[in-house]
Length: 58
Image 1 (cartoon, helix red, strand yellow):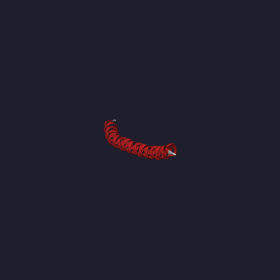
Image 2 (cartoon, helix red, strand yellow):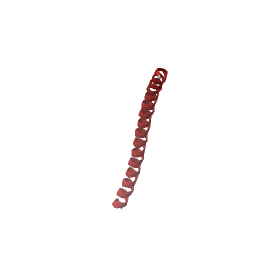
Image 3 (cartoon, helix red, strand yellow):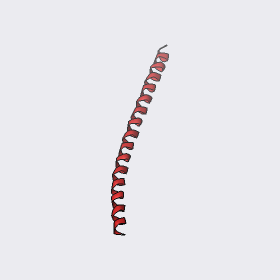
Image 4 (spheres, helix red, strand yellow):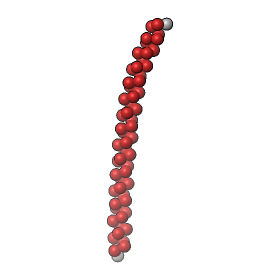
């Protein structure tokens, strides 16, 4: 009987850890997306001004 209790508790703990891991991965993906959006926005503005300067010199 003790073995059955240990299996049930182990199963519940494993499920909670799996859920925590999924949340951690979700947070990591959100942070990576935020960094990518910031970099693309900054580079987009810089590239736009660079092309404007090049076009005006041509």
